[in-house]
Length: 300
Image (cartoon, rainbow, N blue to C red):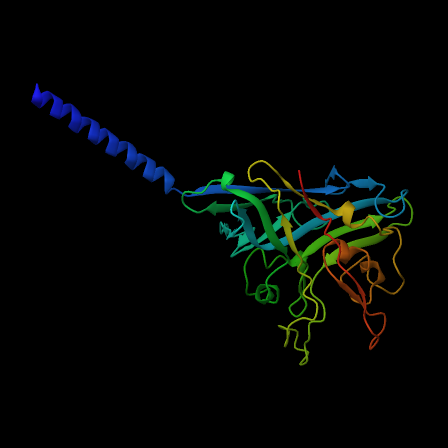
């Protein structure tokens, strides 16, 4: 009888060890996470080449949008204790490189390619799940070095030609192309966000010889973000709320291309969470239009 009891006890111990081992294995396994994004125009889902009504400051304005892309980097999830965990993006050779991601909602209806990308894929650390996080922060644009990298010698998505301005100026962080009043005046009105005041003393067309005066890389934090349950929505209609997209100031770029002499940027850059220094003429004192709470990104 004593031998039987001892055997049963040993079996129970072995089973207990096996259970602990399986638990430890699962707790140390990493978890993949996809962060979903969507594009919208005043709450209506974006579709490339579609004309949207009531866009901008004039309620009669219609806006046909043919391009919608943007870069993000330095993404962090906020943990339950308030600290932030930098995300490690999956290096897919196309949409994600280092800590940079390109979100692309156009499907080649006019510009770009037929390929789209509406998510960022990452791997959470061992033992962590989506429920361990309660918010997210990211920066719109590119880090300085990657922004001004030689486009012929770098990799995707930094080498996308449709988002390139010049080696010195860098890339378009946001590209939204559209036509205001498409059935009437057909006024091109775009939003191209990028760095300005990038010095190139030698005029060789390469990297700036000093930091750009205005980086124009806003940081966005969505503190109520719940991974695996919510989508991050980029709504261009909210950014253009106070803009007349059927009009463009003569002798200036179409819409807002981030130029500091462009009046159309006065309402747009602040809505992205950026101060905008308006310089109407060379040598004039900048008039600062202060940043507002950004309206481009929200949760659904």
